[in-house]
Image (cartoon, rainbow, N blue to C red; front, side, top):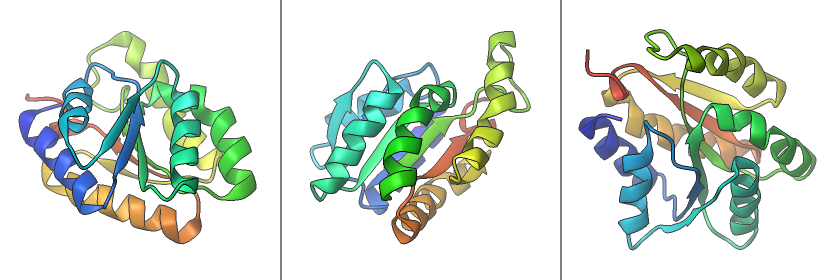
Length: 168
């Protein structure tokens, strides 16, 4: 994640009123995890499994918090069972902020499969999402995803790629 994207993502979380974040650090978003962990207005819970992170966020929402889950898009597959059981059944709005490995411009062969399944999986889980490839769109996209999630009582996602993660 570029420094400008880091600032925009943190700004977007704060502007959206996110006060609880869980996540599994990945290579692209690790600086965001570190920044959020130091933010006194956001309670941060690191996890070793994205499904557990979603469950913790769901519990936080039930306790009155405004949660977000930060993870790599590969974590969507891990979290999908938890999302289906918890949110499709009961309606829990968790904002998902995912690095979009495998998007156009990917430099690692292992990232390609993550990109192939990310959007179809979000569609299958009925999660509305935005793909953000420009830093200037990142903060407002996080705010919009959170707003949509709360309106529909279901997760909404932001997939982060392009100029937000690569400096060509």
